[in-house]
Image 1 (cartoon, rainbow, N blue to C red):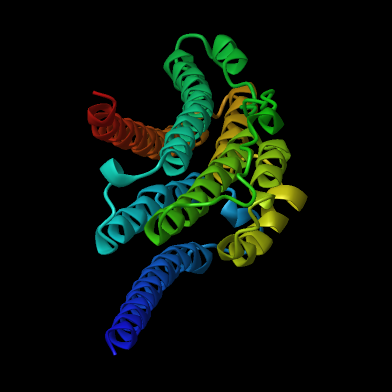
Image 2 (cartoon, one colour):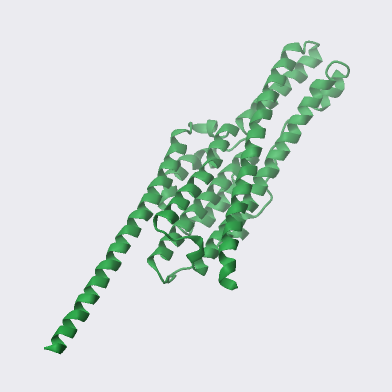
Length: 309
């Protein structure tokens, strides 16, 4: 009788533990699905804000692209809170994933910043031409050279992240966080690839970075990528604002030659003012992203250090 009671107790305990683990797995799965839904909504919003054709290739649209980065990071932070799994509890696999993701983004954003600086320098050259217009019109024409995007010479294929394959995790929470990290990493670098392609007027950064993200095969990216791919790859050209500036500068050069430059000069000056504000907004946005990524890395390091002490 005693043995029977012991066996029934063990069986009941086993069933209770199984039920508890299954319940936890269901809750975690629901949290991961909610995270993916939040990220998908962000990507769909980008699609809604996107116009067909070359209208995508504009500074205002690039700004909308970069806005995705803090949004998906916010969705990830919410997931971490929802499942009660702070950085201090993460295993090595997720710590490495987060650390490498931040490092990769910082490098890509550095190239974005360099491209914006190149455009800012070209704007200054046009502004200088306007200042020379009254006293040295012939010299002004020399500063009205066509703005050419900064070509991307970087080989992004060398930045490939190795996937862990059949990784084994000690907890369901670790698995959920690791999967979510891979989602935001791939979307984050994909965004930078699109932005770099727009700024450089070349499909190369986008195509090479797309190869890196293809290994994870994120279902969240399929819809938005198929829509944007045509504009970035098949219709890739200089940004809309840059094209308009170049046309205005060419008109001014022709007007100077004919001795009637007043209206053309005002048009170029107006466009330069708008262009300057757009560049400043983008540069500020990139700087803020830098700061947030560095803050996240510092938080990670502070959480890991106590383990090693």
